[in-house]
Image (tube, rainbow, N blue to C red; front, side, top):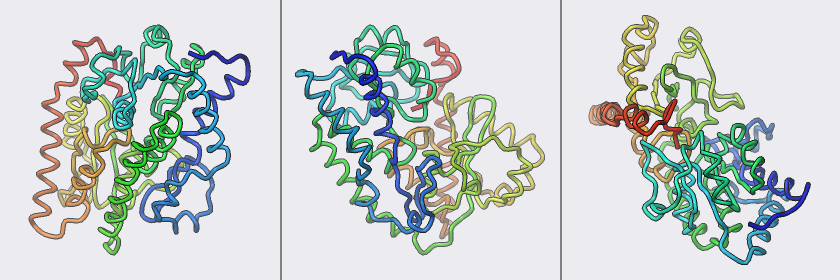
Length: 376
């Protein structure tokens, strides 16, 4: 690893983090606000739905950070030693044809086969920093949702890092473009961007003229659940599909809200997603909806519009499974026939059954993982 001294090295590392989270997402019409609290002009953000504008890397600081990181990688004269600490970041590296010296472990997500010989470094939420440091990485790639927890640990071992914006599909493709520049994988990155562009240009017309359903998203954790806003990945998918998040308008990804406040929002649809240990989460949801009297007063419950989402499609981070996720959502949000309503119920039942069959708790305990699998 090329060692850089003093404040410049630290500054470059911080730029490396900023470049993948700064201005990562321009808002889309009926899509995603990934500004994370940036007070972008509301009119311009709502009017922007051109995919080229959405993915363009135009901010001078962002461009400078990408260029600085690219030059540093080139100056090494050898392939960089990269660690991917989550399944989603590992999938991106695989698509970009990047080799890894270290990769995360997961009991519910599949790591690409090409990394079968890479050293396991622990879960996304709790990588083993002794193992990470022993691999002498040049770069560590992680999801931005874990930055506050992981950044101090990465600083301590004097390496470069980047936190990828995986809170939305467009954010993921912005990150892909930047990684392509930094690691000389522009061709692979452009092929992926072209694939998304083609998909988006067709998909954005799908629900454009339909009435927007009011949606509440519960993200289940072992023993509790929180509200997912439009700034979360699951929330961004609902917004991309044209749904109206009843807890929109905050810069937070997730909110802790009591059921009384939820009732005041009166959602048309309640979606239930699982983060970590999906077998525990689906059991928790079922028990709470059966025993907590307030749920029976929700219109969505009375009308049978409460749906479980497949954990493989609706995790904490954007993945390449987003077309399947949107297909799963379609009959839930827009049932136009009895067949659609039946399909929505079928998708929900299959998601709950898959969660129950995951044996995630048993696998985690066998692997000695405390508190879950760390998501994706």
